[in-house]
Length: 372
Image (cartoon, rainbow, N blue to C red; front, top):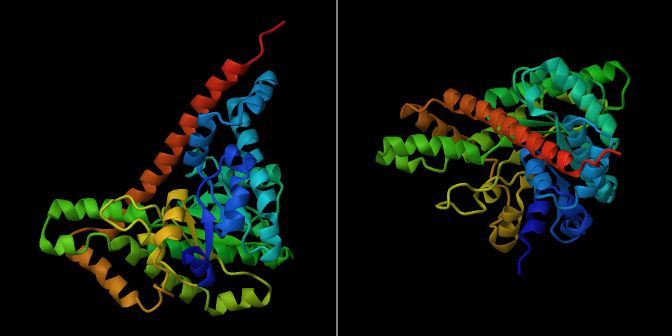
């Protein structure tokens, strides 16, 4: 059987797993994926933790101990999630060492309820970095307006960051600018820039979900012809922006000081529409120095029947721009689409976090020792 995952890795795409649970850690499954499936990183988010902890598999003893100490539910969640991230980081440490810090990374997100509060986001990022206490951690900060200055400040403190929930090309350019500004701050403090890493998580499938809904409402032949094209076009133009920014004079000055490029990361790569090939957002987004973070189903599908045939991004920018322009001609506002997606993204993570709070609180009460 051809090894599509190896070919993907050879093309410069780092394969990260978009999932984590205690069972995956303790069963040896994560180590197996690293050894056999070319997985070199892990991403988490509030939804992933909500599903993992709500399943209860492997968490009961720690929750019982936390209940005995009468910790708050917020503290309990942080103790549980950082323990999983720390253990996953230890499993990935050999990859981190072998790639000089490029991969072998595990991401953990700031409390999504802080998405519109800059100062609180900075404080939370510093706290998470301290709690996990592993050099191969990435702190996830959402690319909201309030998140941008937080990214600069956190990078400026030498903390590596995964910028999440990026949907628009304009916001992505602002994210890259925030990263460069953070590196400049770090340089002024005399920090080692080579130790600071970052990825910019550009969300993919949700763009097609929102745009296709609007195209279906129109129902014209022109609208049908653009179904399933917006997400890939958007991501490809993001890579064009990446190439521009990371060849600028400003970047080259930082690179000479030891800085490393902020890699584009393709997030939300599980296909939502069954009419599309289940490896669409892997096959069509192959480019050097990128990351594709996949749910396990997408990882398995890519291994089974992914079509990896070299770079599928560079050289496509003209067509990508034409596809997005085609949407505007049909009256579908790109700016409206990406703003709705950002607002919904923050809201979905907040909902997952609130669900996690409720289910963890219930478990703390259930496992609390009787007094006396």
